[in-house]
Length: 492
Image 1 (cartoon, rainbow, N blue to C red):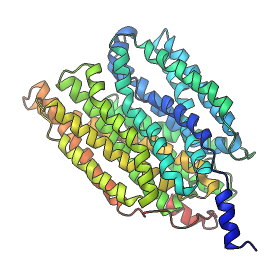
Image 2: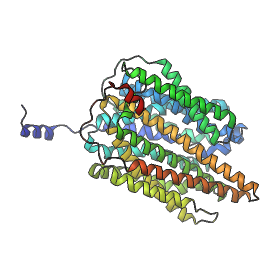
Image 3: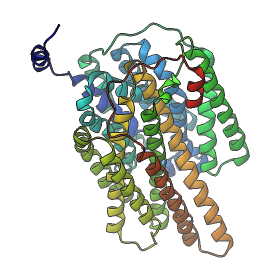
Image 4: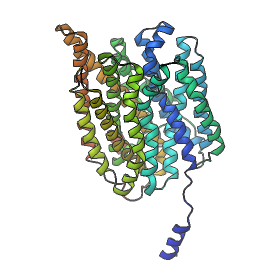
């Protein structure tokens, strides 16, 4: 029997975890996720260069999100089957190939294909990073490390428009990809040399029927939401949206059946754990509010205030940087005090910032807009790091990859829902005001105010989930055994 003294000696002499594997994963994830929103400011130029309309050009962002939603559900199985280095190589290889193709695109369809290839690499990288963090980092340090992960997963989308604004100020849109390519390529080469494998691959077969159903379900849902939000063909969008919802329902049913033989494509037993489900709810609704506000603020600054893409990017950059710099500090506070003391004040700050945006006018001082945006991003930093950490920390090790895939999938769907919701509300209100005789600017501003109000209301939903979160994961996590199919079905 080991004595307490011997245990203490063992703990003192145990080697510290090797976090080197995470540095390159975080750097790679930051670069690939940055590209999800980097095309927003380039859309006007692409419309001219390729002679396409606004709806078609918007697909350069939509198709990225759509591909992520389709591919991420498959990564839970994929990451268990291949080594860390192999998954990293596949992710970065796809991303760099897509980036080269995008920079050389000679026609609009080629650029769309390039965005699909880029997004496929990104879809592998996000769950790979989260799964590796949970496998490598002990619970007492996860908050600190997850703070750096937050920089990659949350700050990168916020900085995308700022980076593209800087590039487009004096260069062609192709340089958006040419600037990213050597950085991504360098990270890929050095990362493959430095990375070590974490865990052992598990040989297993894939249920291809689940793959097809997932593509129809999640792809249909994101496509339908995006088309409704972009004011495109509403009738077609609604039909596809319904098919997507039905597809997801069929996918859930199929996974519940496969769980009985431990062969699901995406293991939904993660949802049986209350802490993970609550964290998922907080993350999803907060992400809806964040992406919705990003779209609205871009429209307000450029369409109502007449600011250039560069000026718009520079205005929102301090908020993104504040979020990134605070990530590690928030992580340390989580390690010391738990989740609730950060998440609840963060949600309150998020609500205050969103409520302040409701009162924007055509002459609101620029410094006040800056203060509101920084407050918004600081609040999100206080939410995302603790939520990611406590949610995945509640899972047993064999469900880390599946939990990361569930989180990534829901994040993409939530982003599409948030964008569709605010754009639809803004458009409906603006149309109503125009019919009542309001000017174009007044109608646009009125529509944005209503949309910001809905985003503020979403923050109250986040608060309802947040107050139910525990401060910490209580005790060691035990494996989830699927001996109660009915309970799994209810949780799913």
